[in-house]
Image (cartoon, rainbow, N blue to C red; front, side, top):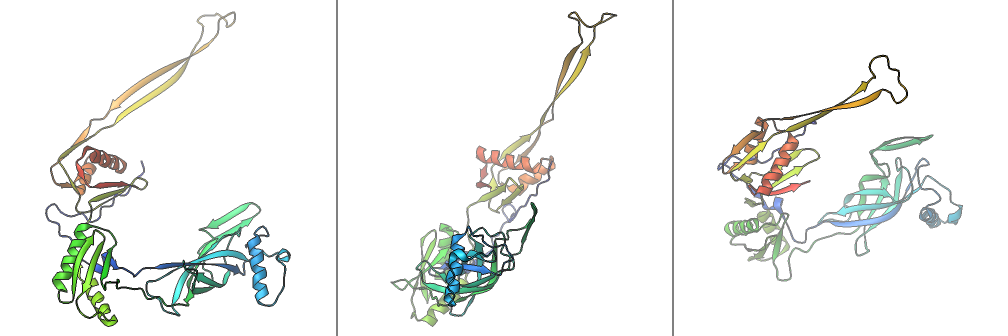
Length: 371
């Protein structure tokens, strides 16, 4: 049987666990600070015959349009080049971006090109959801793979029809998010919404930054801050810097994540079991069939209704292994359970099945996520 890996993270001792405090900036973000996606249509040139074929009419028309920009009038029907490929270019703009900032871009073929290896992206405007141009991309592609085909033999590594250009785009517009709401307040958005965590964040801010700001938990995912001091850009920046570095103890739902494909189990330190008994045994059934030939006795020759007969003989044996069992007291952890099961030599795949059964019995006080 294949050996599966068991991974247990954040396992804490029974009644001796101390949750670590983390910075607010690691579990939340200020409203308004977010990434924006941009996309553009462009051409990759310089391919060694692995570009789009004449069936890609959009590519031929695009080549004709580019040549027209340089004063060359070439009908798209006269273009027959496999060294060019039509691509879509995507990038993410960070929350704060200034004109001239460099951005990474991803390039993916949309035609029938077989490979973009060795290609160079021509100047491609990148537009946002409002259709405005926010950046311009250009440069040689980095593929990280290859694809060679000859006489029906194919050799390929990764996907050669997509790649990236590190620092391949230049921002053409500045983005400065609006941090203050209309009423002059700030909001912290939790990455993993939780009522307890939101309440703890508000309490920590009120306790340590009381003269400057008043905080209140609006719901599981938002904490609203009302600055009490003047709200100029410098003051707001200093306030945000001081608040996001405050440390709080986050809370979370007890979860056990199981990956059936790899046999990986990840459990948090706040996962507990009720008193439970687990019995595990195997029943092995073996069926063996033999074929015997029955021959006529004496000197009787086959024929006239007398012939040899093949007679099947079947034997069935059943062996049932002695059921092994483990007993866990109230308050045991997943770590205690797994160590006990490994002590009776239960396989990793069986441990996953046992966890599912314990969850159905109501003894596992955590959310069981099967991937």
